[in-house]
Amino acid sequence: MVRIRLARRGRKKGAMYDIVVADAKAPRDGRFIEKLGTYNPIANPAKVVLNVDKAVKWLLNGAQPTDTTRALLSHEGVMLRKHLQVGVRKGAITQEVADARFEAWKQEKASRNDAKSDGLTQKQADEKLAKLDAERKVNEARAAAIAKKNAVAVAEVEAAAEEAAPAEGAAE
Image 1 (cartoon, helix red, strand yellow):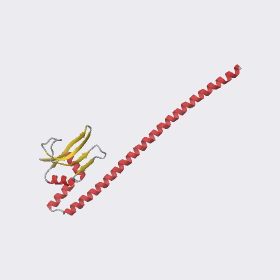
Image 2 (cartoon, one colour):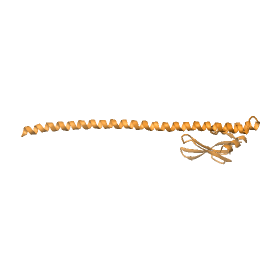
Image 3 (cartoon, rainbow, N blue to C red):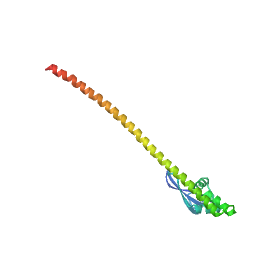
Image 4 (cartoon, helix red, strand yellow):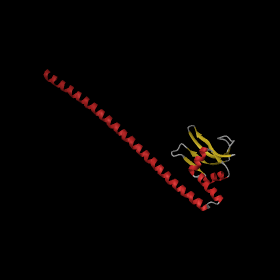
C-alpha cells in the first residue's frame, strides 16, 4: 500500500516536513518513492509548498494520505482537484468546467489568505503601538517620581541654607 505522508527533517524544536509518497511499511524518515513538497509549521501562517499535479496523480492512482496530510492536501486544493477529476472521468462534467471551478476556488482562497495576512500585519502594528504607549506611560511616571524626589531634595537644601544664613548673621 502506498501512502502520502510527512517525513520529518530540521532541527530540534524547529521541525520541517517533506510531503512524500512512500510504502506504508517504510520508516517515517526512511525510503520514499517521490517527494511532493514541503510543509513548515513554524512559519506564521504555516507554509506549504506542493506540486499539486503530482499529488493529484498519486491520489488518482490509489495512494492513501494520512490524516494530517489529507488536511494539508485539502487546504491546498488537491482533494478538490481530485474530486473534479473523478467527475471528469465519469463524464459528469467537462475538463474546462473542472478547471474553471478550480481556478475560482484558488482565487477565493487567495483573497482570504490576503485578508488574513493583512489582519496579522495590522494586529502586529497595533500590539507594537500598545507596547510603545505602555512604555511611554512608565517613562512619564518615572520622570514624575524623579522630579518629585528632586523637588523635595531642593526644598531641604534651601531650608538648610535659610537656617544657616540667620545663624551666621546673629554670630556677627
